[in-house]
Image (cartoon, rainbow, N blue to C red):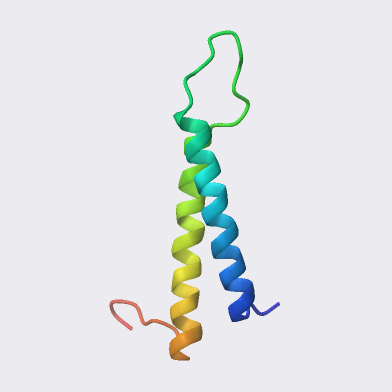
Length: 72
């Protein structure tokens, strides 16, 4: 499956929304008697990784060539 520009932008927007939701939930005060089933800080880290990958993919889509590594 090939990721086109609209799909890449949609993933970026959805991941940004998920990051904002996780930030909001993580900033709420903890309730001592209620167990959090999801660690929202881990969700934020995963969202940042996905955003970095999608930005690299956007650069590839816009320029038409893959970014070269340090030694490539």
